Image 1 (cartoon, rainbow, N blue to C red):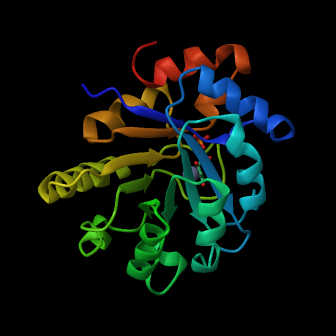
Image 2 (spheres, rainbow, N blue to C red):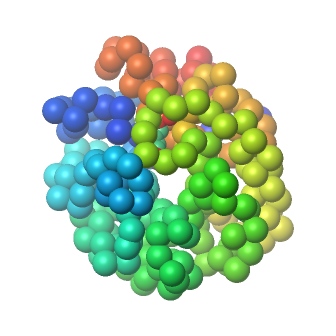
Length: 220
Ligand code: DX5
Ligand code: ZN
């Protein structure tokens, strides 16, 4: 079985000590750093902006996997790119011209991801798959950490895996929401190769991060 990359969501970190938290998950084996950006409009929660991303950038060399849950999204792409995002993922519902949004991310020299909400079908990718670097399947409704995994999304992960393989392109398949030791294996079996995990990474405090990440990789 594939050993997935782990992208801890810093939404579950201690926001008063974010720099230290990022260094701790880096040392504990995180592959990417998942940054959830929420605007209180596209989703019912408000988190952080490009200023915080920029301040965190010197704390790790690991890729910043920036998940934008904001609308409109286009006016903020450049700010997140300049702040140090490596992968910028957007939701098709956050603007009228998602193909153009993907082109804009690529023009900034960044990897482009498309995130599918639980009710958004895999078919949405038909005319984007040739342009993107990552698909993020949401296994909860976006907005909050600590929600339960929606099992119907496993079928979508399988469908997206088929689309990616058929495309022959190098596209990562990431799952986000309710991923823990129990659901991680199902996601990987369905075809995921990157797992986002907030609660399951940060549970128990810094002394547990390495153990938590190893467990998510199926090695704990
Ligand atoms: C939800 C976010 C997720 C969330 C995951 O809107 O996109 O990244 O923080 O948190 P857990 O792993 O706790 O479900
Ligand atoms: Zn996320």
